Amino acid sequence: MEKTCAVILAAGKGTRMKSDSPKALKEVLFKPMVSWVLDTVEQAGVPNVCTVTAGDSPALEALLSGRSETALQPERLGTGHAAKMALPFFSRYDSVLVLAGDAPFLDAATIQGSYQLFRESGAAACVITAQVETPTGYGRILRENGRVAGIVEERDATPGQKAIREISSSAFWFSSPLLAKALEALRPNNAQGEYYLTDTLSWLLSQGHAVTAFCSENPSIVLGANDRWGLYQLNETARQAVIRRHMENGVEFVNLDGVLISPDVEIGPDTLILPGTILRGKSKIGAGCVVGPGSVVIDSTIGNRSVFNASQMTESTIGSDVKVGPYCHLRPGSVLEDRVKVGDFVEIKNSTIGEKTSLAHLTYIGDSDIGKGINFGGGCITCNYDGKAKYRTVVGDNAFIGCNTNLVAPVTVGQGAFIAAGSTITQDVDADALAIARGRQVAKEGWAAEYWKKK
Image (cartoon, rainbow, N blue to C red; front, top):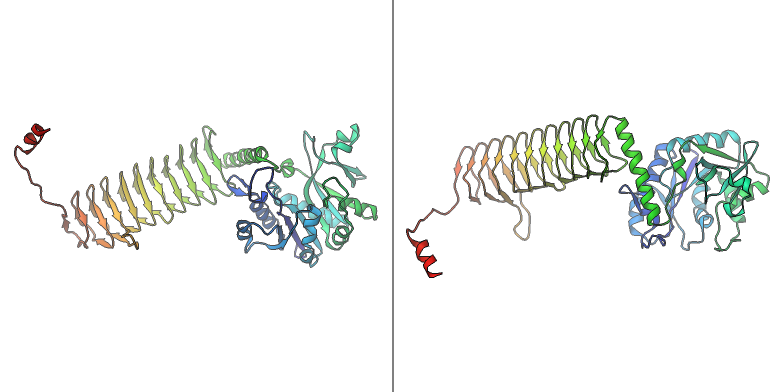
Protein backbone atom coordinates (compact mmCIF):
# COMPACT_ATOMS: atom_id res chain seq x y z
CA MET A 1 0.00 0.00 0.00
CA GLU A 2 2.96 2.34 -0.43
CA LYS A 3 1.04 4.53 -2.92
CA THR A 4 -2.03 4.80 -0.72
CA CYS A 5 -3.05 7.17 2.03
CA ALA A 6 -5.88 7.72 4.47
CA VAL A 7 -7.82 10.87 5.28
CA ILE A 8 -9.67 10.88 8.59
CA LEU A 9 -12.47 13.40 8.97
CA ALA A 10 -12.37 14.60 12.58
CA ALA A 11 -13.53 18.22 12.53
CA GLY A 12 -17.08 17.47 13.68
CA LYS A 13 -18.23 19.24 16.81
CA GLY A 14 -20.01 17.41 19.62
CA THR A 15 -23.03 19.72 19.48
CA ARG A 16 -25.69 17.10 20.15
CA MET A 17 -23.51 15.68 22.91
CA LYS A 18 -23.60 19.09 24.61
CA SER A 19 -19.82 19.14 24.56
CA ASP A 20 -17.14 21.71 23.74
CA SER A 21 -14.67 19.08 22.53
CA PRO A 22 -14.66 17.44 19.06
CA LYS A 23 -16.82 14.36 18.67
CA ALA A 24 -13.81 12.33 17.54
CA LEU A 25 -12.27 12.80 21.00
CA LYS A 26 -15.20 11.19 22.78
CA GLU A 27 -14.07 7.93 24.31
CA VAL A 28 -15.20 4.36 23.78
CA LEU A 29 -13.83 2.20 26.59
CA PHE A 30 -11.61 5.11 27.67
CA LYS A 31 -10.02 5.40 24.23
CA PRO A 32 -10.84 8.36 21.92
CA MET A 33 -12.76 7.27 18.85
CA VAL A 34 -10.18 8.81 16.53
CA SER A 35 -7.50 6.69 18.25
CA TRP A 36 -9.48 3.56 17.35
CA VAL A 37 -9.46 4.72 13.72
CA LEU A 38 -5.75 5.62 13.72
CA ASP A 39 -4.81 2.24 15.19
CA THR A 40 -6.92 0.38 12.61
CA VAL A 41 -5.36 2.29 9.71
CA GLU A 42 -1.91 1.45 11.06
CA GLN A 43 -2.81 -2.23 11.50
CA ALA A 44 -4.11 -2.35 7.93
CA GLY A 45 -0.76 -1.13 6.62
CA VAL A 46 -1.87 2.23 5.17
CA PRO A 47 1.38 4.18 5.56
CA ASN A 48 0.34 7.81 5.11
CA VAL A 49 -2.35 9.52 7.18
CA CYS A 50 -3.85 12.99 7.33
CA THR A 51 -6.56 14.02 9.79
CA VAL A 52 -8.87 16.94 9.06
CA THR A 53 -9.57 19.05 12.14
CA ALA A 54 -11.23 22.36 12.90
CA GLY A 55 -8.06 23.60 14.58
CA ASP A 56 -9.89 24.54 17.77
CA SER A 57 -8.87 21.64 20.00
CA PRO A 58 -5.33 21.54 21.43
CA ALA A 59 -6.15 18.13 22.91
CA LEU A 60 -6.90 16.69 19.47
CA GLU A 61 -3.81 18.24 17.94
CA ALA A 62 -1.68 16.79 20.74
CA LEU A 63 -3.17 13.33 20.21
CA LEU A 64 -2.42 13.49 16.48
CA SER A 65 1.13 14.78 16.90
CA GLY A 66 3.61 12.27 15.52
CA ARG A 67 0.87 9.98 14.21
CA SER A 68 -0.81 11.96 11.46
CA GLU A 69 -0.44 15.00 9.30
CA THR A 70 -3.27 17.48 9.75
CA ALA A 71 -5.40 19.63 7.47
CA LEU A 72 -7.53 22.51 8.66
CA GLN A 73 -11.24 22.86 7.98
CA PRO A 74 -11.87 26.43 9.22
CA GLU A 75 -15.62 26.19 8.56
CA ARG A 76 -17.71 23.08 9.13
CA LEU A 77 -19.37 22.87 5.70
CA GLY A 78 -19.87 19.12 5.47
CA THR A 79 -17.91 15.94 4.83
CA GLY A 80 -17.18 16.78 1.20
CA HIS A 81 -15.74 20.13 2.18
CA ALA A 82 -13.64 18.44 4.89
CA ALA A 83 -12.20 15.97 2.38
CA LYS A 84 -11.39 18.83 0.02
CA MET A 85 -9.29 20.48 2.73
CA ALA A 86 -7.00 17.43 2.55
CA LEU A 87 -6.56 17.70 -1.24
CA PRO A 88 -2.91 18.91 -1.03
CA PHE A 89 -2.18 15.79 1.01
CA PHE A 90 -3.98 13.01 -0.84
CA SER A 91 -3.08 14.30 -4.31
CA ARG A 92 0.45 12.99 -3.64
CA TYR A 93 -0.84 9.38 -3.72
CA ASP A 94 -2.65 7.13 -6.19
CA SER A 95 -5.44 6.03 -3.86
CA VAL A 96 -7.06 7.49 -0.77
CA LEU A 97 -9.12 5.89 1.98
CA VAL A 98 -11.55 8.41 3.49
CA LEU A 99 -12.79 7.59 6.99
CA ALA A 100 -14.88 9.16 9.70
CA GLY A 101 -13.02 9.91 12.91
CA ASP A 102 -16.06 9.01 14.99
CA ALA A 103 -16.71 5.51 13.58
CA PRO A 104 -14.45 3.39 15.79
CA PHE A 105 -15.28 -0.18 14.77
CA LEU A 106 -13.86 -0.41 11.26
CA ASP A 107 -11.35 -3.27 11.27
CA ALA A 108 -8.06 -3.82 9.46
CA ALA A 109 -9.31 -6.89 7.56
CA THR A 110 -12.13 -4.81 6.05
CA ILE A 111 -9.71 -2.08 4.96
CA GLN A 112 -7.39 -4.62 3.33
CA GLY A 113 -10.20 -6.59 1.68
CA SER A 114 -11.89 -3.49 0.31
CA TYR A 115 -8.58 -2.17 -1.06
CA GLN A 116 -7.95 -5.44 -2.90
CA LEU A 117 -11.42 -5.29 -4.47
CA PHE A 118 -10.94 -1.63 -5.34
CA ARG A 119 -7.67 -2.26 -7.15
CA GLU A 120 -8.79 -5.44 -8.92
CA SER A 121 -12.08 -3.89 -10.09
CA GLY A 122 -10.46 -0.82 -11.63
CA ALA A 123 -13.33 1.24 -10.21
CA ALA A 124 -13.08 4.94 -9.43
CA ALA A 125 -14.35 4.34 -5.90
CA CYS A 126 -15.23 1.56 -3.50
CA VAL A 127 -17.89 1.99 -0.82
CA ILE A 128 -17.38 -0.07 2.31
CA THR A 129 -20.76 -1.50 3.32
CA ALA A 130 -22.34 -3.94 5.74
CA GLN A 131 -25.42 -6.11 5.95
CA VAL A 132 -27.49 -5.24 9.04
CA GLU A 133 -30.67 -6.73 10.46
CA THR A 134 -32.37 -3.35 10.90
CA PRO A 135 -31.30 -0.86 8.21
CA THR A 136 -33.80 1.80 9.30
CA GLY A 137 -32.30 5.27 9.04
CA TYR A 138 -29.41 4.32 6.76
CA GLY A 139 -28.82 4.84 3.06
CA ARG A 140 -29.36 1.65 1.01
CA ILE A 141 -26.84 0.39 -1.54
CA LEU A 142 -28.33 -0.08 -5.01
CA ARG A 143 -26.42 -2.59 -7.14
CA GLU A 144 -26.42 -3.59 -10.80
CA ASN A 145 -24.34 -6.60 -11.80
CA GLY A 146 -22.47 -6.40 -8.51
CA ARG A 147 -21.43 -2.80 -8.97
CA VAL A 148 -22.93 0.16 -7.21
CA ALA A 149 -25.66 1.96 -9.11
CA GLY A 150 -26.36 4.45 -6.36
CA ILE A 151 -27.14 5.07 -2.72
CA VAL A 152 -30.72 5.92 -1.86
CA GLU A 153 -31.62 7.60 1.41
CA GLU A 154 -34.46 6.01 3.33
CA ARG A 155 -36.82 8.95 2.90
CA ASP A 156 -36.46 8.59 -0.89
CA ALA A 157 -36.54 4.78 -1.05
CA THR A 158 -39.33 2.70 -2.52
CA PRO A 159 -40.80 -0.14 -0.43
CA GLY A 160 -38.63 -2.59 -2.36
CA GLN A 161 -35.50 -0.52 -1.76
CA LYS A 162 -36.29 -0.23 1.94
CA ALA A 163 -36.07 -4.01 2.15
CA ILE A 164 -32.39 -3.85 1.16
CA ARG A 165 -30.20 -4.60 4.19
CA GLU A 166 -26.87 -3.55 2.71
CA ILE A 167 -26.05 -0.06 3.93
CA SER A 168 -23.23 2.38 3.46
CA SER A 169 -20.60 2.95 6.10
CA SER A 170 -18.63 6.17 6.36
CA ALA A 171 -15.54 4.66 4.70
CA PHE A 172 -14.58 4.84 1.01
CA TRP A 173 -11.64 4.11 -1.26
CA PHE A 174 -11.14 6.59 -4.11
CA SER A 175 -8.82 7.14 -7.01
CA SER A 176 -7.12 10.29 -5.78
CA PRO A 177 -7.22 12.20 -9.12
CA LEU A 178 -10.90 11.35 -9.66
CA LEU A 179 -11.83 12.29 -6.09
CA ALA A 180 -10.18 15.67 -6.62
CA LYS A 181 -12.35 16.25 -9.71
CA ALA A 182 -15.49 15.05 -7.93
CA LEU A 183 -14.88 17.37 -4.98
CA GLU A 184 -14.49 20.32 -7.34
CA ALA A 185 -17.87 19.45 -8.86
CA LEU A 186 -19.70 19.26 -5.51
CA ARG A 187 -22.50 21.72 -4.82
CA PRO A 188 -24.36 22.25 -1.51
CA ASN A 189 -27.75 21.34 -2.97
CA ASN A 190 -29.40 20.27 0.26
CA ALA A 191 -31.34 21.72 3.16
CA GLN A 192 -28.21 22.00 5.30
CA GLY A 193 -26.27 23.87 2.62
CA GLU A 194 -23.36 21.47 3.07
CA TYR A 195 -21.04 19.59 0.75
CA TYR A 196 -21.64 15.84 1.14
CA LEU A 197 -18.87 13.35 0.41
CA THR A 198 -21.44 10.76 -0.69
CA ASP A 199 -22.47 13.08 -3.57
CA THR A 200 -19.08 12.40 -5.16
CA LEU A 201 -20.27 8.86 -5.90
CA SER A 202 -23.25 10.17 -7.87
CA TRP A 203 -20.96 12.47 -9.82
CA LEU A 204 -18.54 9.66 -10.62
CA LEU A 205 -21.39 7.45 -11.83
CA SER A 206 -22.79 10.29 -13.93
CA GLN A 207 -19.40 10.64 -15.63
CA GLY A 208 -19.38 6.96 -16.57
CA HIS A 209 -16.97 5.80 -13.90
CA ALA A 210 -17.53 2.53 -12.08
CA VAL A 211 -18.19 2.42 -8.34
CA THR A 212 -17.94 -0.87 -6.50
CA ALA A 213 -18.81 -1.90 -2.95
CA PHE A 214 -17.13 -4.16 -0.44
CA CYS A 215 -19.52 -5.75 2.04
CA SER A 216 -17.75 -6.29 5.35
CA GLU A 217 -18.42 -9.33 7.51
CA ASN A 218 -18.39 -6.96 10.50
CA PRO A 219 -21.76 -5.16 10.77
CA SER A 220 -20.45 -2.94 13.57
CA ILE A 221 -18.38 -0.89 11.11
CA VAL A 222 -21.42 1.29 10.38
CA LEU A 223 -21.91 2.27 14.01
CA GLY A 224 -21.28 5.83 15.16
CA ALA A 225 -22.62 8.21 17.77
CA ASN A 226 -24.35 11.55 17.41
CA ASP A 227 -25.43 11.97 21.03
CA ARG A 228 -24.66 10.67 24.51
CA TRP A 229 -27.07 7.76 24.18
CA GLY A 230 -25.41 6.72 20.95
CA LEU A 231 -22.01 6.99 22.64
CA TYR A 232 -23.23 4.77 25.48
CA GLN A 233 -24.40 2.19 22.96
CA LEU A 234 -20.98 2.23 21.29
CA ASN A 235 -19.37 1.63 24.68
CA GLU A 236 -21.67 -1.27 25.44
CA THR A 237 -21.10 -2.85 22.03
CA ALA A 238 -17.34 -2.55 22.47
CA ARG A 239 -17.49 -3.78 26.07
CA GLN A 240 -19.23 -7.00 25.13
CA ALA A 241 -16.92 -7.62 22.17
CA VAL A 242 -13.74 -7.08 24.23
CA ILE A 243 -14.92 -9.29 27.10
CA ARG A 244 -15.94 -12.05 24.69
CA ARG A 245 -12.49 -11.93 23.06
CA HIS A 246 -10.81 -12.36 26.45
CA MET A 247 -13.13 -15.25 27.33
CA GLU A 248 -12.12 -16.97 24.11
CA ASN A 249 -8.49 -16.55 25.21
CA GLY A 250 -9.11 -18.29 28.54
CA VAL A 251 -9.94 -15.40 30.88
CA GLU A 252 -12.66 -16.07 33.46
CA PHE A 253 -15.53 -13.75 34.40
CA VAL A 254 -18.08 -14.82 36.99
CA ASN A 255 -20.22 -11.70 36.58
CA LEU A 256 -19.89 -8.80 34.16
CA ASP A 257 -21.42 -6.09 36.37
CA GLY A 258 -19.25 -2.98 36.21
CA VAL A 259 -16.46 -4.68 34.25
CA LEU A 260 -14.85 -2.34 31.71
CA ILE A 261 -11.77 -3.31 29.71
CA SER A 262 -10.05 -1.05 27.19
CA PRO A 263 -9.44 -2.64 23.79
CA ASP A 264 -5.63 -2.63 24.09
CA VAL A 265 -5.49 -4.49 27.42
CA GLU A 266 -3.77 -7.91 27.43
CA ILE A 267 -4.83 -10.64 29.91
CA GLY A 268 -3.30 -14.09 30.35
CA PRO A 269 -5.29 -17.34 30.55
CA ASP A 270 -6.83 -18.55 33.81
CA THR A 271 -6.97 -15.03 35.20
CA LEU A 272 -10.19 -14.21 37.04
CA ILE A 273 -11.69 -10.75 36.56
CA LEU A 274 -14.20 -9.95 39.31
CA PRO A 275 -17.14 -7.48 39.18
CA GLY A 276 -16.51 -3.76 39.25
CA THR A 277 -13.03 -4.07 37.76
CA ILE A 278 -11.82 -1.43 35.28
CA LEU A 279 -8.75 -2.13 33.14
CA ARG A 280 -7.61 0.86 31.10
CA GLY A 281 -5.01 1.88 28.54
CA LYS A 282 -2.34 -0.63 27.52
CA SER A 283 -2.35 -2.60 30.77
CA LYS A 284 -1.02 -6.16 30.80
CA ILE A 285 -2.29 -8.79 33.25
CA GLY A 286 -0.46 -12.11 33.55
CA ALA A 287 -1.81 -15.65 33.77
CA GLY A 288 -3.56 -17.10 36.81
CA CYS A 289 -4.23 -13.76 38.48
CA VAL A 290 -7.25 -12.52 40.43
CA VAL A 291 -8.15 -8.89 39.78
CA GLY A 292 -10.97 -7.26 41.69
CA PRO A 293 -13.60 -6.86 42.87
CA GLY A 294 -13.65 -3.11 42.41
CA SER A 295 -10.07 -2.76 41.16
CA VAL A 296 -8.78 -0.13 38.72
CA VAL A 297 -5.65 -0.75 36.63
CA ILE A 298 -4.43 2.03 34.32
CA ASP A 299 -1.47 1.60 31.93
CA SER A 300 0.13 -0.88 34.31
CA THR A 301 1.51 -4.42 34.38
CA ILE A 302 0.69 -7.31 36.70
CA GLY A 303 2.76 -10.51 36.63
CA ASN A 304 1.57 -14.11 36.89
CA ARG A 305 -0.46 -15.53 39.78
CA SER A 306 -0.82 -12.19 41.51
CA VAL A 307 -3.85 -10.95 43.44
CA PHE A 308 -4.97 -7.34 43.09
CA ASN A 309 -7.92 -6.97 45.40
CA ALA A 310 -10.13 -3.84 45.54
CA SER A 311 -7.21 -1.52 44.80
CA GLN A 312 -6.01 1.00 42.21
CA MET A 313 -2.78 1.34 40.27
CA THR A 314 -1.60 3.77 37.60
CA GLU A 315 1.53 3.51 35.43
CA SER A 316 3.04 0.97 37.77
CA THR A 317 4.34 -2.61 37.70
CA ILE A 318 3.88 -5.54 40.04
CA GLY A 319 5.64 -8.86 39.61
CA SER A 320 4.51 -12.45 39.99
CA ASP A 321 2.98 -14.03 43.12
CA VAL A 322 2.28 -10.59 44.60
CA LYS A 323 -0.67 -9.87 46.88
CA VAL A 324 -2.11 -6.36 47.00
CA GLY A 325 -5.10 -5.04 48.87
CA PRO A 326 -7.71 -4.39 49.73
CA TYR A 327 -7.84 -0.60 49.49
CA CYS A 328 -4.32 0.09 48.23
CA HIS A 329 -3.21 2.84 45.88
CA LEU A 330 -0.16 2.42 43.63
CA ARG A 331 0.62 5.79 42.09
CA PRO A 332 2.80 6.31 38.98
CA GLY A 333 6.32 4.91 39.08
CA SER A 334 5.66 2.15 41.62
CA VAL A 335 7.38 -1.22 41.16
CA LEU A 336 6.55 -4.24 43.32
CA GLU A 337 8.93 -7.14 42.72
CA ASP A 338 7.97 -10.81 43.01
CA ARG A 339 6.26 -12.13 46.16
CA VAL A 340 5.69 -8.71 47.72
CA LYS A 341 2.75 -8.40 50.12
CA VAL A 342 0.90 -5.10 50.42
CA GLY A 343 -2.03 -5.01 52.83
CA ASP A 344 -4.96 -2.68 53.40
CA PHE A 345 -4.71 1.11 53.22
CA VAL A 346 -1.18 1.28 51.82
CA GLU A 347 -0.13 3.96 49.34
CA ILE A 348 3.03 3.70 47.23
CA LYS A 349 4.38 6.36 44.88
CA ASN A 350 7.48 6.41 42.64
CA SER A 351 9.12 3.64 44.64
CA THR A 352 10.59 0.18 44.18
CA ILE A 353 9.65 -2.54 46.67
CA GLY A 354 12.05 -5.49 46.70
CA GLU A 355 11.22 -9.18 46.56
CA LYS A 356 9.35 -10.71 49.53
CA THR A 357 9.01 -7.37 51.33
CA SER A 358 5.83 -6.93 53.35
CA LEU A 359 3.92 -3.69 53.94
CA ALA A 360 1.03 -5.00 55.96
CA HIS A 361 -1.22 -2.00 56.47
CA LEU A 362 -1.67 1.75 56.96
CA THR A 363 1.65 2.74 55.40
CA TYR A 364 2.84 5.38 52.91
CA ILE A 365 5.97 4.79 50.82
CA GLY A 366 6.96 7.65 48.50
CA ASP A 367 10.14 8.25 46.47
CA SER A 368 11.87 5.26 48.03
CA ASP A 369 14.11 2.32 47.18
CA ILE A 370 13.04 -0.51 49.47
CA GLY A 371 15.11 -3.71 49.47
CA LYS A 372 14.24 -7.39 49.76
CA GLY A 373 12.79 -9.29 52.70
CA ILE A 374 11.86 -6.20 54.71
CA ASN A 375 8.95 -6.01 57.15
CA PHE A 376 7.14 -2.70 57.64
CA GLY A 377 4.85 -2.48 60.64
CA GLY A 378 1.58 -0.58 60.54
CA GLY A 379 1.49 3.19 60.31
CA CYS A 380 4.93 3.76 58.76
CA ILE A 381 5.65 6.79 56.60
CA THR A 382 8.51 7.92 54.40
CA CYS A 383 8.55 11.69 54.83
CA ASN A 384 9.72 12.58 51.34
CA TYR A 385 8.72 16.26 51.04
CA ASP A 386 10.02 19.23 53.03
CA GLY A 387 7.71 21.81 51.48
CA LYS A 388 10.12 22.72 48.70
CA ALA A 389 11.72 19.55 47.35
CA LYS A 390 11.30 15.79 47.44
CA TYR A 391 13.99 13.38 48.61
CA ARG A 392 14.49 9.63 48.49
CA THR A 393 14.56 7.05 51.25
CA VAL A 394 16.70 3.89 50.95
CA VAL A 395 16.12 0.79 53.07
CA GLY A 396 18.54 -2.15 52.79
CA ASP A 397 17.62 -5.82 52.51
CA ASN A 398 16.18 -7.68 55.50
CA ALA A 399 15.68 -4.58 57.63
CA PHE A 400 12.82 -4.37 60.13
CA ILE A 401 10.77 -1.17 60.37
CA GLY A 402 8.67 -1.03 63.53
CA CYS A 403 5.12 0.33 63.73
CA ASN A 404 4.55 4.10 63.47
CA THR A 405 8.03 4.81 62.18
CA ASN A 406 8.73 8.02 60.28
CA LEU A 407 11.69 7.90 57.89
CA VAL A 408 12.57 11.53 57.15
CA ALA A 409 14.24 11.71 53.75
CA PRO A 410 16.93 11.88 52.62
CA VAL A 411 17.82 8.96 54.83
CA THR A 412 19.31 5.47 54.44
CA VAL A 413 18.57 2.47 56.65
CA GLY A 414 21.28 -0.15 56.29
CA GLN A 415 20.90 -3.83 55.53
CA GLY A 416 19.55 -5.86 58.45
CA ALA A 417 18.98 -2.77 60.62
CA PHE A 418 16.15 -2.66 63.16
CA ILE A 419 14.04 0.47 63.74
CA ALA A 420 12.18 0.52 67.03
CA ALA A 421 8.44 1.23 66.92
CA GLY A 422 7.44 4.88 67.21
CA SER A 423 10.78 6.24 65.99
CA THR A 424 11.33 9.28 63.81
CA ILE A 425 14.55 8.63 61.91
CA THR A 426 16.36 11.72 60.63
CA GLN A 427 19.88 10.30 60.29
CA ASP A 428 21.29 7.32 58.45
CA VAL A 429 21.21 3.98 60.28
CA ASP A 430 24.13 1.60 59.83
CA ALA A 431 23.68 -2.00 58.74
CA ASP A 432 22.65 -4.39 61.55
CA ALA A 433 22.15 -1.49 64.01
CA LEU A 434 19.19 -0.82 66.30
CA ALA A 435 17.82 2.71 66.01
CA ILE A 436 15.56 4.17 68.68
CA ALA A 437 14.39 7.72 68.16
CA ARG A 438 11.64 8.51 70.65
CA GLY A 439 11.28 10.24 74.00
CA ARG A 440 11.93 8.24 77.17
CA GLN A 441 8.68 7.12 78.86
CA VAL A 442 7.87 8.94 82.10
CA ALA A 443 5.14 7.76 84.52
CA LYS A 444 3.79 10.15 87.23
CA GLU A 445 1.99 8.13 89.85
CA GLY A 446 -1.48 9.41 90.79
CA TRP A 447 -1.49 12.19 88.22
CA ALA A 448 -4.50 10.86 86.31
CA ALA A 449 -6.63 10.51 89.44
CA GLU A 450 -6.02 14.15 90.37
CA TYR A 451 -6.80 15.22 86.82
CA TRP A 452 -10.17 13.48 86.77
CA LYS A 453 -11.12 14.98 90.16
CA LYS A 454 -10.69 18.44 88.66
CA LYS A 455 -13.05 17.55 85.76
